[in-house]
Image (tube, rainbow, N blue to C red; front, side, top):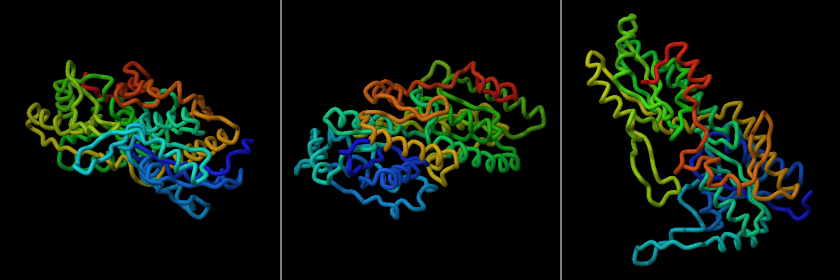
Length: 376
């Protein structure tokens, strides 16, 4: 046991997802019940570490939060303390390394270790704080399931449930009006949410980044269903899908964000283009957007989040540092932050992560076997 550790800080950074509160609950309860530690939670990610804005995490504070989506600590994806935006009196913005302020705040509060929940940007800063001598354990977070360092991440299962539920509801209105319904889902540059959600939600067409599409093939599928007596179709579009010979549809670029390239809106474009190809149908568009991030956390994500949280405290108390908790080969393991940060192994957005849907894999084959079209 690491006798030097008396207080742990917890941070959640980047986009929210279901399961974060399960991790926070598990970290707090393990630290208190198993090791007799104190725990505090910094608010709004690294921003709270800079402003020293935190709450005490005790057993009462984390009681009854495990099922809740989002994070009770709130979050931010714009606060890199090693390149922090400071506004001058004249309104101009300068960037400065303010990590020393964060270290001083932690020292004054007696924080001996940090548990950091986030994606590549958040965990890059976690690694950098470890390099400065802070004991840090990272926990990867994304609903996209695109991290090759771990078999699965919490939040993914809950998002799939939300997508499947939405498709079930859209199915009935599509049938009632003989409509083609285009449903856009998240996933960035990987198609896991689209293909697994679409498969469970009885989609007829699924467009994913790993298989470039031809909308003429999609139109043929719709007409084929018409000839079969099915006068409606459900088309699931991953936000990162792209046409053959084309590129992703970028909604906007946020310069001051670690996740600067924002996708979204491809479904609207696909809807417009399909309407011209199948004028006999009304083609309607729904973007599930942030519905995929919220909601009651699924059993699987609660369980996984708890395992991650417990493991993070155990690693700290065993003297480990600069490690990331993962789930690999049906068991909790850990890897070096130095090895995975910036490699795409925890979803580096500029590279889109490395865990792609295999166009020739079992999942795609299963979809094709039951008649799902990928626009190819």
